Image (cartoon, rainbow, N blue to C red; front, side, top):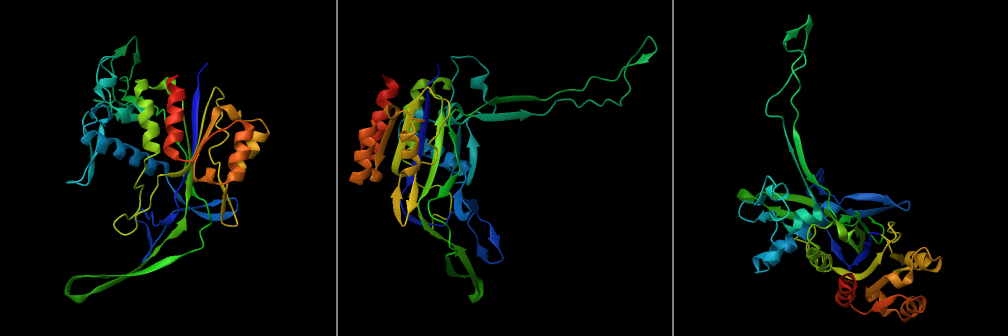
Length: 314
């Protein structure tokens, strides 16, 4: 039976301006969604995936060759580039070189047909029946990503905060604009089935990347937001349903894990499968309740991730 790894991450508190370059007039906007009937700011899963890949890229540039990525960010051209744009390693057999980002995050290469066919073109005539030329088909080389990530949602509702800015231009001209900002934390979940990895050794670097996320989207030259986990919930189980992708809540400014506790008390989640780490454990009330249920608790995020990696290797 396949085992599955699920996680729920809560970031540190900060001033977010993950603006994506979208504007309404001279107002740079945040992306927003309705969540439990209120407006919350949000960050896409694609932005989180980009940050994971960039973490691996920087580690590889520092000498960790095993984390070399196929797609990499070129600062000089400010564009993505590929080392193997045809993904030949996935076509050549099990001994061919593959990259961690293709293995964990997946890829798709759609190639058009080399010769276009048209059913209306005249074809050969045989036995009085005119046959059209066969339509030429394209090819698709793809791999579904093993790591799946939810959209990140702000823990608190967005109340409409804006900053007013002025930018000097040529010949004394001044550009006036505003930007939406949000003082909040973000939470998001992830899921993966480790057995689907081409190289099982890539599981630990994936968890480490999730625990070490830095910049995720936004105008970092103006607003740096730390996307690394302040608290983390991890679950390794044979249950294929996550049941805990959004484990955190906020009650009158206080961080709670009531969504997780409800699932644990109902026994929908086996507490023995769960590890919780980070600031949420600083609450003696939460820690006592979790440990009484059978959850393994750590005061820090990194020790919790290490403990889960030890379970995965056992």
